Image: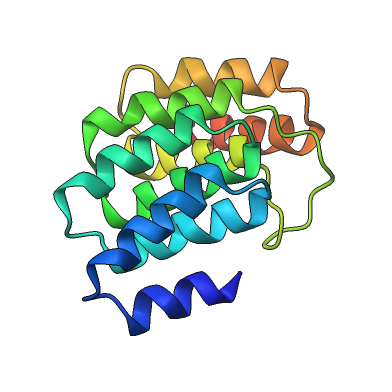
Length: 157
């Protein structure tokens, strides 16, 4: 998976590199390869006008929660404080199907990642507290519920 990052880094100016990475990120059968390609694209082509749109698609349309989580993380890192992305983060916080055991930072829960992003980048947004309340009560993952409860107490004072 590191190969995608090295490819993008060493052959960034080759017009086929971006096309190859996009194909891997959307068509590869293995979610780890798709996730690595998502990260490589975001980190090496963040100034390309299509990158944000493409990451938004991966964050909502990939059928694997890890790839969705990778796209959400990259959006938050490279396109900070952009209100139009709140909907993507909200969607992930509520709908991501993550059911695996936690192993941060190797395999963090994408719902928690989305909550962290929303709290950091949109703490005053009118959807933030209701979302935290919902996740504190209804998230299927005990660790995400506990995190949401903790943050809710901090934000509500």
